[in-house]
Picture 1 (tube, helix red, strand yellow):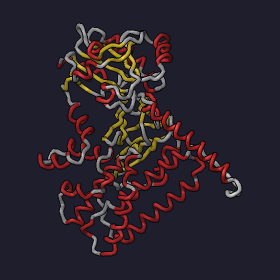
Picture 2: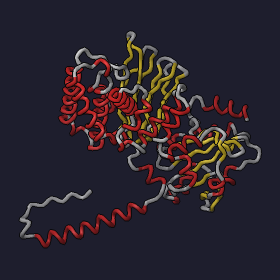
Picture 3: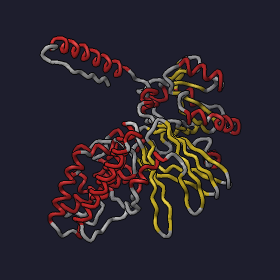
Picture 4: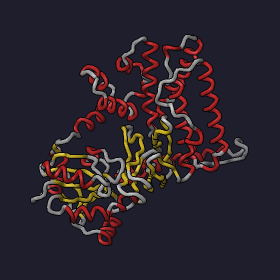
Length: 469
């Protein structure tokens, strides 16, 4: 962004100003054209890419878990500690600010803690004990726990006085906005916006997370109607942030529409959601997870829900099932090897005696990817006669990639894709790395998001799949 500050008499300098603005317009347009010409996977991923390292010190054995949404689909981020007094770490690359939630039972009640990942490089640090986990990391990432102490966000509220309840929520929301505004110098504009976005989503969700059937005051209904319009006018906020609250808000909006229409069947009321929400990643993810996790849905319910999911999202969700064979278009497409020769995907995935093919999608600039290399080498040595190990980089700089290969790993079975429109990239919707794909020797997809070699369950899962194949 170019900001121009001027303090002058516009009439006196009108000609100079017009000439300047004309030149500025030409410059901006040229910049836009150059930006449009950037069409490679690396740049697509590096825009708003956030790298997260999660460190957990295990004082007891067990599994530490965080929950959120990634690409607006349910995502469980877990780290297992099989021994006491050990430290385990896990890394992930995200495309947008993300709120992770942890849940613990404290004195018979659920305690919810929230951690906001909103920097280029963030680290969350925890101590794990059987009686609960303690966060010991950067206070900035835990700012939401300072602002919000509520642990009943997923239980329907039944306030004695709905009017007072709404006023109380608004007062807390305004106070929180005032707090972060006063403290805004401690955050970048990007971080400040992410905090505000979450507080807004949280506020909307609490407003509509009540038992509407208990409301008898018409003025309260009118107040909710007003907020319903405000939420809908800003509904695309859901696309800016990964948070479990996003889905809760959609459910509560549907509950309110059902209440107003006197039709308790939520799915019948999908048509009354704000049109801006239709055909967005936020609604796609909500509906796809709804279909996947609710076994009580009828065929008619599912057919109705599918009408509101973008065809591209629906196709990706339905096609990537276990046993799906890669298309001829993908198999015949080519990528470059270490000597920059074009090689067909079919030839790359072809095997002699191996049962499985494990593909690692990575880049030289991806720190979590680089930290997987030692474990990748261990797995490669361990399963060399049973699994073909392939690494595909999405680097834009082929020379840098080549130099890296010669220094750190050999050239065999290393390839590069620098085109975001490549059939292989588009089919698997590569939006974060590292990403591991597992195939059998018939070009069938076993998993389009397999465990990392560093994961505790990697060996167990590999052995089980090898037994099946």
